[in-house]
Picture 1 (tube, rainbow, N blue to C red):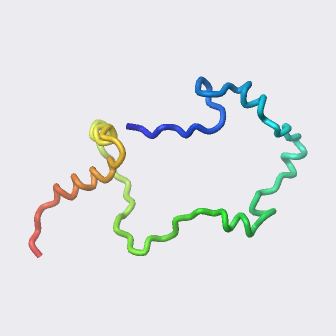
Picture 2: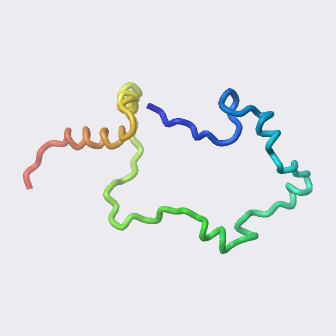
Length: 103
């Protein structure tokens, strides 16, 4: 199962037409000079930009490690077809395949 695209803005064949969006737009087009003179939001409002940033930050106790792993396409597609949580199910299958060791 793949993620559904977010329904934002104009999407051909879905919901509103481009003419509909143009009809309700109250933003005039920008000139080349206005675009050239544009400055980043963070330069104009540094305090607001800093507070608006949403970053997760470091984990207090990392329990997983990011890796790159090459998996057969059919296997990967089969796990993805099971829906959300397919990565967790792959992790569980790998864990179940580990040899049992005595401490």
